[in-house]
Image (cartoon, rainbow, N blue to C red; front, side, top):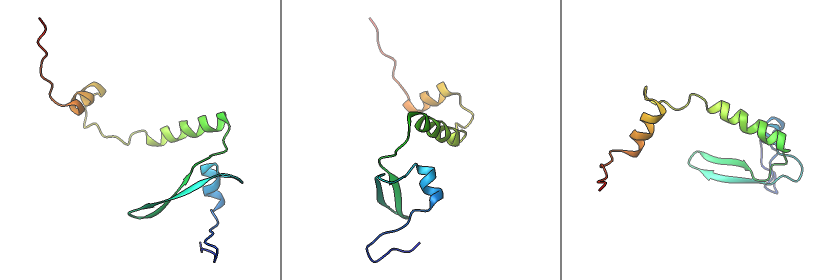
Amino acid sequence: MRVTTKGQVTIPKQIRDHLGIGPGSEVEFLATDEGARLVAVNENLSEEEASHKFRKTLASMAGTLDLNGMSADEYVDWLRGPREQLDVD
């Protein structure tokens, strides 16, 4: 993509569709160490579309956390660290 003399860029259709960006949508460009990131601020999604997108995002994250064989309870205990026993009188 090229930036116009007015500083404008065209967001590719595939990305607009994926982010739910349409006419009137607000976006932000955030500076990162790698360059810049486009964030859709005001997505024009229906409740059903937003729910579908949320479920799709959750599904894409499945299996991305390696618990090193720990159960969920063991992992939470590991996160909390050692705890001293409370004296109960």
